[in-house]
Length: 341
Ligand SMILES: Cc1ncc(COP(=O)(O)O)c(C=O)c1O
Image (cartoon, rainbow, N blue to C red; front, top):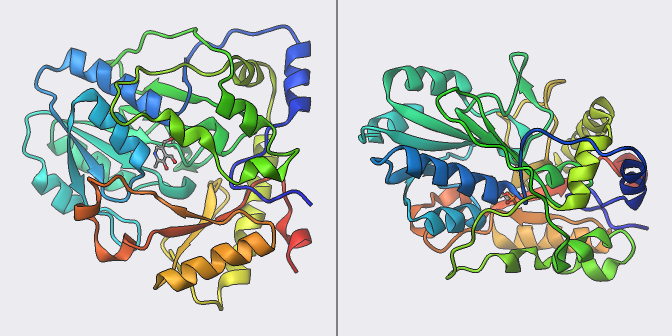
């Protein structure tokens, strides 16, 4: 039995299908991954706004984001995310003192952030909002797609679709214009290994993707790989089916885990507008975390903890998330009701 992964397994059949049809050019800004799209957007803002020196980011954030911001030389100020995954928008607004504030807002796990309140704050303060939509692809709020709420937004295709790389950077305001890159590149070693995960569990153990981040060296934004670009341009994914199976798998975990030793995020409301990235929950101690990871290994299911923090984030963490969040897969390539009984 194939291991149930968090991110979809790459499908060579989809690649062949895409390669057989005439190539279509995609008129957008495609990068290797979310972190590079973020980097590109920061570089553009540095160029445009001389007074831009600091970015406000949540303290619930993975090390890749912090590393890439540090690469650009922009200073970081953390704001708090509470155990309900919510921002204290009043406190955030009070802490913003700069003339021009750039704020990173994350739509955690495919669920919308507090966009109503954020938009109100935006009216009162001069700020640029960067929407980190890497956990979400097909979710929406009030009939508007997530990814259209920030002034700038970026996603991470391979978290939801069977691709090897890819992130689209979008500007939702006419004040910020990104010149489209039409670039792509060949596969790197870790992407070749990643594409073979479905064939061999051997490759599952360790992703070498993280090795791409060299902490001491400046890394310029990298474009998407040529195969994933071709698939994005030529292959039509069944959005409704993907959403439907992910929602079904999410419900599966909700029912399976609800009488167990885990805490749920009750404020995350799953409805027909949400396409979840994973089923997230948290444990009271590390023994429980380790128990569930072990359980996953015994059942051939990838259960991960998120995020891996950057060392510079740790002093700013609140107690709730020091232990990190457990993520259970809802990957549309698997029907969990048939796998776990
Ligand atoms: C909230 C968040 N933002 C950004 C990223 C970086 O995205 P990518 O892996 O596509 O570079 C991640 C990665 O997991 C993430 O969880």
